[in-house]
Image 1: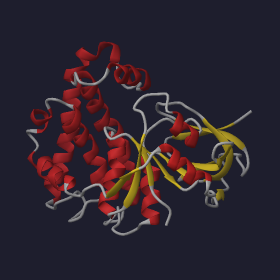
Image 2: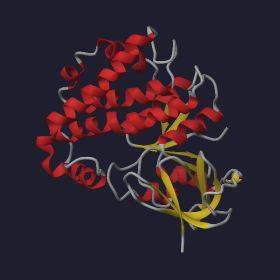
Image 3: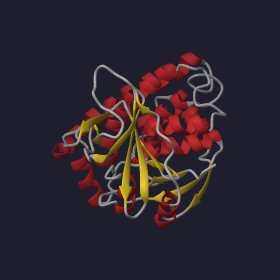
Length: 306
């Protein structure tokens, strides 16, 4: 089995999702630290321009976005499963709530209330994120506190209603990871986190259980070692372009792929797979040879390259 290589930085709340998956599944993995701000030359050499963390590399295949990374890890390492009660569609749909309604006010609080964040990181995030008026961040703080606690109340109500240790039963699942990563971000980055979460006793107990999941078995490597692994491998065979009356793409088309929310850094290549779950393209590089870059279909747009 090829090495699982996570390109990430330790403070990243989105990378924490995947680190928790490693813990839930008890996986061995290699860590490559990437800068928190651009430029990120070692990462973008692999991805073709995609700058968000984390990115999972397996040989010459590069998986972008936590929803696709989780899907790939589940396919390769199905036990213990991320979906013990089934309902995978609902579980993946929950990401839109956790990534937006819960994460965004927490990110605002992290940047607005944490005096220890270096200026260059704040400047980068103010340009990168488009969901807040960062030019007036001090005035936004009461609203961020209110919105974060409103989402925490939803989580508290659900945990209380289940009567179980986790949201879908007696074992942690992907839905728990989605709900937990904004709580982890609060505890890590918001100075008043204890006060913020004090009203939510069910969340506090559940958070302790989530922490006990661990983060798998990690070893640190550097980017040149990861690049050498990509260079010596070949991408897996892609699944092809599924027929669909609502697009005219075909295998081999020159396309660009980019997120549709923020971080609009297009990745260009040859289309090798497209269906309702995934977009895959191949890129030829002098440094790495042929690399396949994979994206989830949801939240990403594909455009024909002229």
